[in-house]
Image 1 (cartoon, one colour):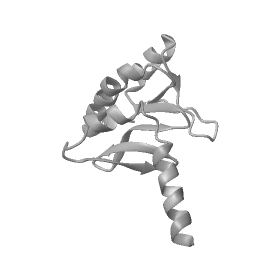
Image 2: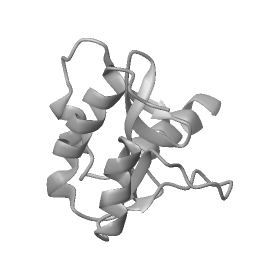
Image 3: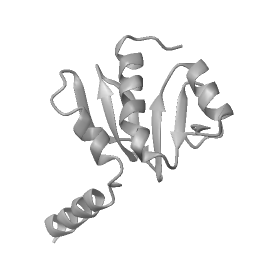
Image 4: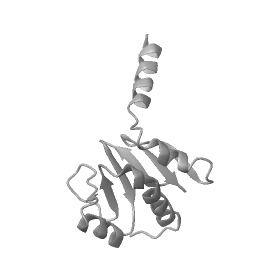
Amino acid sequence: MKKEAKKKQNGSEKAQTDARFVPVVQAFKGIKGVRAGKLFSSLGLKVNGKIFAMFGRGRFVVKLPKERVDGLVSAGKAERFNPGHGRLMKEWAAFESGDSEWAELAQEAYKFVQHGKSE
């Protein structure tokens, strides 16, 4: 019985993956050093062990330079990411829409994180 419940739970987790995030994951398939998987309560991508893009709670989230995040927020395209404890993250932008740009934003985040240019 426990195995069946676990299979159903795992299947439902996969079913909950937002289809808009699938092309982002596929864009990084086969790139050395990039891993996809569950990060906290989100599906995400890591390079060299560091998260650069994720999808959770109905939002696409990427790590970018603070100045870039400031610009996206000022333009009304994104919000600062709140991981749930009330502290907004300076280098993380969260998007609810605009899935056509997500792969490009993820590429930008990948380059930023890969080169270790963060606070």
